Image 1 (cartoon, rainbow, N blue to C red):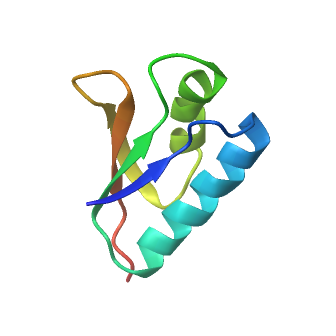
Image 2 (image 1 turned 60 degrees about the vertical axis):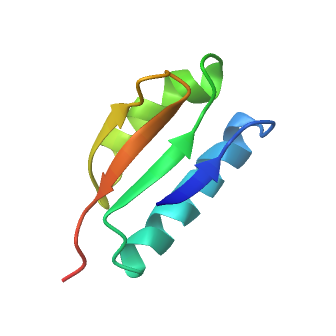
Length: 77
């Protein structure tokens, strides 16, 4: 599974990295990815909004340990 670690990035940098990563996964027909946000902080707080507003994401769910999200990517037609 592809992973993106957003630790040590500003909110703006993290959002851009997230958008690029998700779009690339969509183009490559990757069905599931992991986004590492950390257990607290602005990136973790904002991530659900980013995910809900992306047309390439089917759904997301928090990992059992709370430091990342599993993201299901839409299929490219």
